[in-house]
Image (cartoon, rainbow, N blue to C red):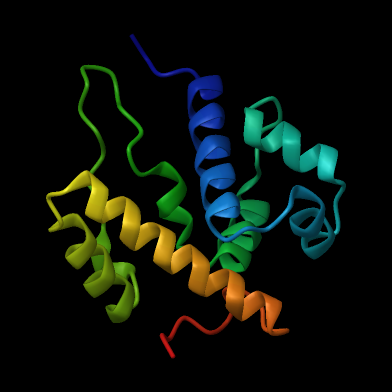
Length: 139
């Protein structure tokens, strides 16, 4: 059975929401950065409206991920997930993802995630964006 476009839209929208929330960016703020309303962001995140290629590219840039990130984990018919191309990620991101995936303890993974979110929040509160769109280096 072929995958419906709705299934893809729901998955991409869910990944968009996951990344936005991880960066602690509100729907309103993301909408303002894109020049659209927060209600349009809601519709994207629920999969009710399809995200065009150009808009997805803009969203990926703002959220600091490659466009392919939104499709990671999407299951094709037969339960086969598409391969993840980590080679297109910045080196620091690959190292961070590999190290994070190597952590066996769910509690430790949760602690590391909480630490990173806390650091992103403190950076934003100091007047700096959580993740600059054009700056993918770790400082």
